[in-house]
Image (cartoon, rainbow, N blue to C red; front, top):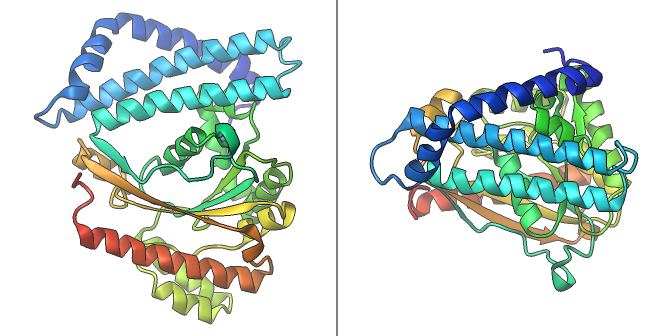
Length: 345
């Protein structure tokens, strides 16, 4: 879908959104208070519509507050003159951490979501974050996993970077906040895989200790159709060995090495963190999510840190290395499921 130009979003859409949502929240203030106080602690009943409404009201409240804070920081920076200075970049990361923290708190209570094994062990001296830039490679499965991982990286004192789909800029706060941080928005249809790879390389090139670039080598959530299509494309491109290995991986899509290679070449100093997670894998559509509310699941995570020097940068070697890691994640997911349902505390 076409994205309005930035000046239209800043001068027309964002102010109009702020006014309309503010009026809506003022009118629905009492309902918001009831939902905040009662629903997160409701012990019985699904209350699907009310839970979604309550979370939507929380989200809209954060949008209004966030836009007000971001407007204030724009004024304080000299009407945008100093927004790229370290103090303002750090401030905007704190804004992101606060907003995701609030959303995370309410998501855990509205949807009975638990997280087990959260947070990489990468904190440096005095909690100042990792001593090297990080390249974080994660599987893609379930709704909102990218923002959950970004939140966990922020908790670990990292400054996350991520490549996002351009349509997310239709969200006013995401649009304003992420365009002030070292993030990249791309149109996959216009830019193709090369555009995404180039964006990853650009973000990795300027990373310093404490920065963490989050990449999903699969490119999307796993579904039977996507898995079949991915294996077919490997065969059509002449990568028969990779196709056979992909057929042995049941729970994930075959990893694509292009973006990972771009990051490793652009910044040889990175340390690599491989993230495995399971628990929300079966929620692949709006209908799945609706039927599951309250979700009542435990999202299990495993973080493994690997020295960057141990990761090959040539394409054939990197592809084999990624398949090795994805096979380990596939086995780990099977083992977690064998331990019992993800809803068990």
